Length: 272
Ligand code: 1HA
Image (cartoon, rainbow, N blue to C red; front, side):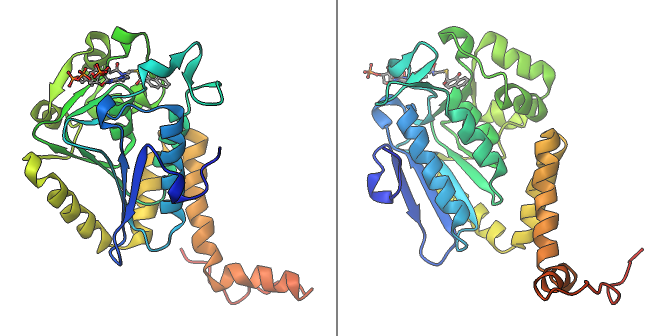
């Protein structure tokens, strides 16, 4: 069943702060260390789409329920042949679509990590724009131990974040790393005592919300652009079109077409 309303959410909690511009998306499967199934991913995707489309939302927090885990990756108990299997019995790797959705979302997404961020859950925090970690956070890739790997952003984005040597270490040995080690590697932005995690995350959100939404939107696209190839240029280019549509020059073309007259661009300056 496709998700069309908040009332349908089972695996995920979705909250919006009244008047503050912050949306919070919480993976709510604490008994499984917030592992995701295809359904969880579908629900997360619905929340991110809502947060993207809501003009009142300026920043999004992604987190996990409880203090033991942010997310432990794909739920191995529903892993079948060819992917993770949901009610429709179709094996899926739909978290890959979710990674793209977070990356392309024109608003900052902040991962708020307490406890384990491992496997596919570790990749989710890496594709977020900023990571605030509690001092009990543990980071790692388990793929080579459980027969999995992410050869997409899970590899390329990791190498960008921590460098090639460290990325190879993290994947080949599949060790766990403390919050402090993650900070030293450049994997997270800051580490705070667990009791202050939410408070500190809100401080970062509020600081971002005071700044120009357009500047932040274009910067996110710019920071993605080179690494995302044609898709990255398209994202950045879309921002140029958006800004152009807001100008008088852009609107002269549309008006002229509708008025069935030639466009008159003569008054628009060619700046150096
Ligand atoms: O690599 C990909 C993908 C690649 C390409 C495209 C798509 C991908 C999609 C997904 C993934 C992956 O995520 S592969 C990696 C899958 N994840 C893991 O290998 C992590 C497995 N979990 C653990 O290593 C540990 O549970 C833990 C380090 C996160 C926490 O350890 P802790 O605190 O000792 O708790 P533990 O007792 O192990 O777990 C609590 C309960 O949660 C257990 O269930 P119970 O015995 O109470 O019934 C445990 O089985 C369950 N659980 C935890 N993580 C998962 C899980 N059950 C299913 N799947 C899990 N990921």
